[in-house]
Length: 227
Image (tube, rainbow, N blue to C red):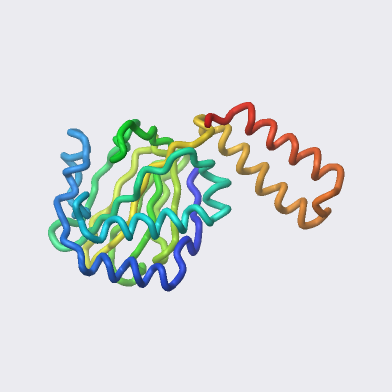
């Protein structure tokens, strides 16, 4: 499932993130790529010892934690601390690749990448190119969102960032291990959750059908979820 989620960041949070990124020193993005992906990756990334990284990560994680649509879509069990990248000048693209299944966590252990996410931090008119291109079952999806908006998509998908030919594209990217490992089950739960939200607005919280379907949603979540 590919889903766009608007306004993850407030205007103040976005301004602070951009201020911190303007102060940062960037490193070669290939440092965090596997052997295959490194052959097609040509961008810049904030290194792990960047002074700005802790505040940036906390800012993004706080925003994700308060967003109900992100929770409904991802059903997150663990979120790898977000990364930040820059596309522009002579480091301006990331060719077709698949994200690695197991991502090392800075605190030890691994996070299984079920879902990938990109949080756009530059406005679309600030750069040309730089689309996130995700290969879907029926067609390629091209994504270029306003700053502060997020897109989530399956980590299993082949995807790329097309060359930035003018300006600079700033973004945060992250990997999520979901409580519900199976993508089809996650999609059914999300569709049910969104339909229940509409039904509750029409029929009210205590309608018998609403209560029954809410129970079915949670029972399916109990059946499928890992914790």
